[in-house]
Image 1 (cartoon, helix red, strand yellow):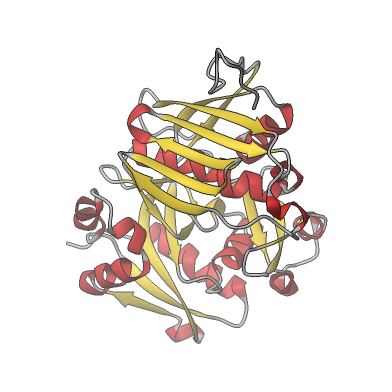
Image 2 (cartoon, rainbow, N blue to C red; image 1 turned 30 degrees about the vertical axis):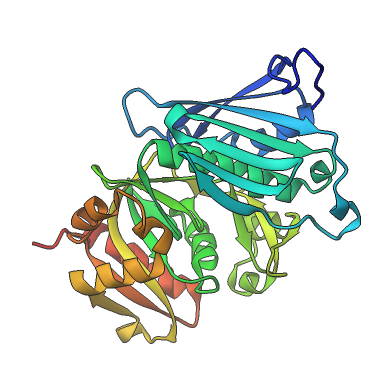
Length: 338
């Protein structure tokens, strides 16, 4: 990111490179003068189904700038985590002076600055700045409800799978894929309040090696084992499986929400694995498990709509395929409560 006396902020520096991407139903134009930075955005969102939530998609603009800063953490095993701040309608994620994202939902724009040093950590640059900025921008500007949940489905209908980290969302998403169901997201789903249609970013599935013990030999298992390994901030190592390249189905369009399923770590048996929840229990658990979404302006409207849907708790079964059979049975039978 170079500046001169006549252009100290680099405002007139040409971008040169552009990519057009679809994110959560929004039409994004991403510009950069750096091919490596733009490639990270394309790696995250390129080649995915063009989900459509409105007749005319909302348009967004993102600028990726590469700085020459040499941060103090350059010799560290990985960069520090971003700090999240907000003010005056702007949302910010800041690692240091050369690595940050500024999101302006009101203007449908975002600026992401990445140092050459952070480009050496492509997973962190992509996931913690570029993906964060673009998903947050699309979600906030379109008034979508962001949920920490996986979403799988079939025949245009979807199920939200909720639970804390380690509850089995990614494992069930993997086995849903293997069984022929559609996968829309592994841990982040976004709901349009008026229509209760769910969209997401079905780009990567992050699977712990231990989850593969139940997967049958075949093309999907081969693809997972050949995927790169990433290390989460928690230290957990996971395969990063590109869903766009795997044998299986990713949801080609937003799914109509049919039911909500809370995943439990408690062991269940076939006859008692699935427990129906009433509207009061549903709303109580939603508020408890989704504190970020519950603080947004559209949460009350979302609650009124979501309370009419069936809700369940699914206990952990000995084999994930048994859980998938339970989930499949909900799709054709899920009905609104009266």
